[in-house]
Length: 605
Ligand SMILES: Nc1ncnc2c1ncn2[C@@H]1O[C@H](COP(=O)(O)OP(=O)(O)OP(=O)(O)O)[C@@H](O)[C@H]1O
Ligand SMILES: [Mg+2]
Image 1 (cartoon, rainbow, N blue to C red):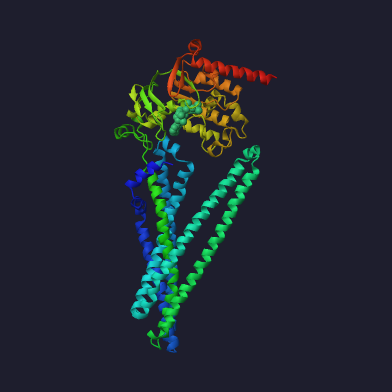
Image 2 (image 1 turned 90 degrees about the vertical axis):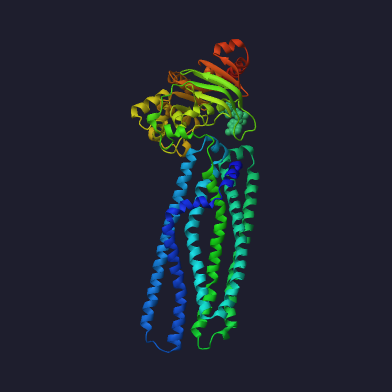
């Protein structure tokens, strides 16, 4: 998690101010909601007045003279209240879903502009929570909590006003317990919130344990740690049971306190009944109703306030997400000329030839603690076929990350066709690069959908050609519905090798000027690999290509092989030259060759 980012942006934005702009479009709706809320609670207060009138006039006066008018007015008020409630609920619902939609949309749009490094530093789960749960908390705060707040505040104010007008002294006595009750309720509320938070945490632990048990079932079995997993799970569920019991107890206590509080309010009215004239039975009943009726609004109000407080965190985290600046941004003048990701000005795009140059590049990952590259220089002329080899962690993927401008050099420049990559837009560069990753990603949808991401205008013939070119045809034919097979979320219904082949075909379809294969054949069998190898030979013709491979036998044909070690090129040349040199590459090659031969002999036996 990028705490630094959060802290930095935290200073700039308090949070709530940035949410206001999402609420602005709904200010009329919210105003209507507020007015309707006041109407609703006004009628609540009025109904008690009706009771008072009925008792004093009809019961006390012993007459039924104007009863029918009373009934009609009463029914009218109740219907009006029902209507107001219905409309405000509908409005609240609209505000909730619309605010949710707007927040999510802007988060998604913003995420698309962030650079690679953001996604490296922040887990999917973290981003997921920001986009889904924070937004829904904010949405419900702006709708339901807001509505509750208005309803209950206006009820309390109106009821208090009526009481004060009718019997000032008794009203003061009854109202005196409001702060007391409020303090008591917020005490319970605080405890309940904490307890609920703990329960949620335990619950997510249980889910995580459960998922681990299932997803890692094979590993659990092979490590024979079933018992350990079991006892961990049992401990968590027991913890959950204890906490839940504790919470139920709290809830019970809370309910009892509420009853007690309203009884106390009643007791005050009964105790001080001599403040009301003996013939004002209606007033007496009215006071009893208000005294009791105030408890529920106080509780809801405290609910709404604590919602506001807890949602503060969500608001902050969400606005921080929106405030994160991408590490790689196009300069304003570049955007001016080339457009951005959403409005590209393709008419101004130059064609890309494919000359790549590292000019004295020093690079350190934003959260890394040492330099991966130091004063690194290298030229790759257009059309050249370069192979990069080296041990794990040598910096091979880092080099291509820089070519793709997923990161920018800490010092020095990366030149594309002789010009600093920063002088042109990222989208321009990316639209000319085909990149097959070490761990390929497919989007949910069919195989065909995925191929079309490479080139939305590809004809079925072009798709077939690309698929054949990378020898993905046999693999696709084996799938249940061929090109129309659903690949599942992230392509998870396919094997890694299958995903690699499809993402290779997808890259080819885009007809890129620069083709980058990072361990693109790591997960396919040897026969497929040979096929892909010959495909690579055809495909890279006329394009600049950078192939990263662990299996050195696959890069023998490269125009130039760069052997990288600790971010430095230690050797450079064709396969023949490097073998003749008997240096680092030679050692690596012979070691691998021997291993492979040994494996073959073992296989044969
Ligand atoms: N996102 C990152 N943040 C910080 N450090 C990183 C990051 N990615 C890589 N590194 C570090 O940079 C160095 C070079 O990594 P790189 O991924 O370029 O290696 P590689 O040669 O591609 O290795 P492999 O063959 O395993 O793919 C490593 O020491 C690695 O730990
Ligand atoms: Mg790598």
